[in-house]
Length: 433
Image (cartoon, rainbow, N blue to C red; front, top):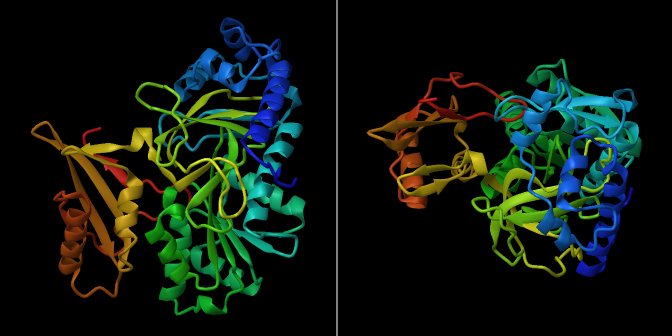
């Protein structure tokens, strides 16, 4: 599937309204989860406008979905068809609470692969590419979609699931891999391992590293570090969720800017505190709300993702697209924000600072309370080449103080003390939980 070349905002909204009507028509009388919700909101397939849809239908939360799956185990009631018509089962990574199980029909799976193909095409990936997936996927949906979409496009797909890091590096070189799909954390780990083993990645054929699962791909310091470790490659960011699929892709002309695939998704930005829809003027920051326009088997409508985004103004991007776009990718998550002495902190902000220090292999942020106040402390693991860990800690403390006007104590961990991550990194530890 090629990306729809919308000419203006009116064309986008006309397409979205048509797709929304088809979706409501498909689920409105048969999906046990959505039937009462749509009926109580007075919404049917004759809905007049997107604004009417947003004003009538209540927001959907992950807690709503979790409660439904608890009440109707194991898959919940958000099923438009009998279970025997579904061919894929995946579940969320459960970074917050119990995982959600998600079913897809063959038609919905094909729709999701269409979205991934848009990501690949924006990144310049085609049938001649050799795409490496460096870990086992388990029930995590993202890389299953990426694999199937790449195979459908004619790419050579190579699995590194049972390999260790050193073996994966050898496979990347031996098979002349041109693209890698992984998290930013693991791309850094592969690059560091190559450096430690004396392997020059300047000889690699890798030209694209497509990252997701963490905000690092749109954090300039992390991107710079990745491209230093992988000098032949450009990093491309994107984001998605099990509940919605692949939503955004990085602008080919502007690093750190994510375009919404508005041919497949209806997106709103709300004030996370009030739920009120925000304007999408330049610089407006809020929580992303998504309606899946083609995933009829298990759709979500006006779903609160928890992702915080910062809108760019309407109008053409440098690349020519007129779709909604976000500066800096996913800024953070509503449930990840920590307020330390009046300063709102997201993990991505700390990633940006740590990314400036090539001598830090890994870190852990420790959040606790003292005398009723939230306190933040940092544990960093220096590389083996660092001769003075204390001096490194002091430099990190000063950088944090300059950036946030906060004193955050930093201490050094022993070599290999901190855990390594392949999928989503979990570096923030709440000590009082």
